[in-house]
Length: 123
DNA sequence: ATCCTGACCCAAG
DNA sequence: GCTTGGGCCAGGA
Image (cartoon, rainbow, N blue to C red; front, side):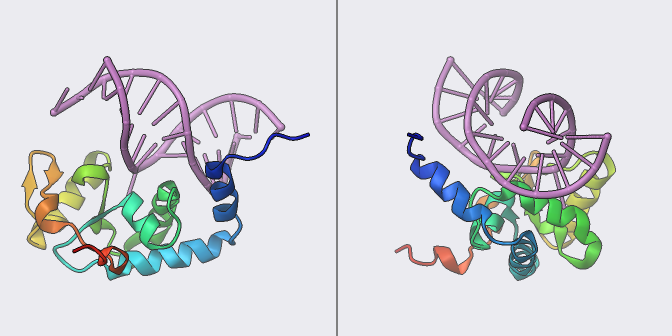
C-alpha cells in the first residue's frame, strides 16, 4: 500500500492542476493591481493570485513580461531587491521616482507594503 | 527520468 | 544584522 500523502503534498498536487497559462494570467492581474508607490513581495503576489507556494513562478512571469507590467513593484521578502547589477539599480531608481523610501538595501515595508483585498479581514 | 538553475522563502543559529 | 539548509516550482539540458 502506498503511504498516504501529507496535507502539504495534497495541497501541492491541487495547486499543480491548473494550466500554467491560467496561473500566469492570474499573477499578471495581481501585479497590475499594485499602485504607484507601493510594493508586494513575490510570495504575496503568488498568494493573492490564488497560488500560495508559487512565488518562484512569479519570477518566470516577470522575466517574460518585459515592461508590460510594473515589475519594479515586486520585491523580495522584507523589501529586499533581488535583481543583480544594473537591473537592481534600475529597480531602485524606478521605485524612488514613485516616492518609495529605502532603509539600507530594503524598501521601508511598513510604509509601502501594498495590501491586497484578501488580507482586509483583519481588525 | 535526473540534474541544474533562477529577480525565492523562511526558520535557525 | 548575517549566513545556511531545506523547501519551493517549472523549464531546459
